Image (cartoon, rainbow over all chains, first blue to last red; front, side, top):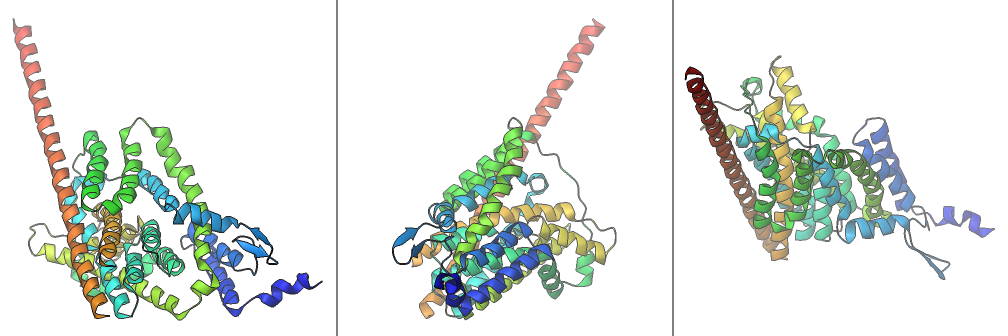
Length: 378
Length: 61
């Protein structure tokens, strides 16, 4: 009869902590609706894989029979072997993005670049906290505000904190509406936040929309080859959307493909949330530095907009710089909401959306550059 | 630690430089694409004007 209570007796306090973490993620997903498509599967997976002897991961039963776990298999095939799941998700994201506001006002690209500052600031903080360079870079990439990029970089750099990084990347993306307004108010005056911007929608030809993803893929491939797969799949999705002859594929990428990968991605990531890897003080530190990365991203974007205003005739509302992070479309919505609150009738959503989609491209470039630079220095 | 710190600073410098370099080249390419559109539009307008002129001339004749 011993086998009936063997599971209860062999549970460790670390595993109990993971049940609480899992329950908290599920609560955040359902009650607060923070990234429910990812946090809910991750939360459930955190409970599932930490059940003592659960065959969701590879196990040896009674030291004799070896079983292969489905979650571990998904992780090894879908993430560890080729980063297939995060990269394939980028096809769907690319098919969802309309680059027209950005192509109509290409200067917005610069804010996408500036708002990656948090990645490097967080990397520096992580090194100062004593993390190894590969771990520090993986923690820094939380500032990309881009779950798939964070997963890819931490996986390639063989970080010991993949679970914490995934949780931080996805939960902070959901917390953008709370984190960004505080950071923006820290570095702007009310007068700056009230600033109105004229929007003249320039027409963007179909030829430009089709050539854009191809050109970006080639440029990024030359400058940051480690980003080529991420940016390439993002742009491939966008090309399917814009070419006008693959409507069915575009809809499949935006709907079923994205939903299916998201469904599997959450529970697959939970493999990295085993009690022994997750329950340690470092995890709290990783979460803290990740939060700092988001704050520095926002500050970097806003300060860069202020810097540009020194030279520009038509001033830019500095809050647009904060929309340069990759969290799409949340960051641009937050900026528009703040502009509306500060000055009713102030509409800057199109400029913010331009900066926001530029952030998508820039964060993927940043991920590739980090991999290249860290690999050279390790 | 010191070596790691120096490496982190170098990654910061080269990383931001790399991102801005890529973005500036992309902006330049978008500008070229836009200029090609403008030239194309001008040519199309010129062609249309010429066609209209010829049609008017043939109608007069």
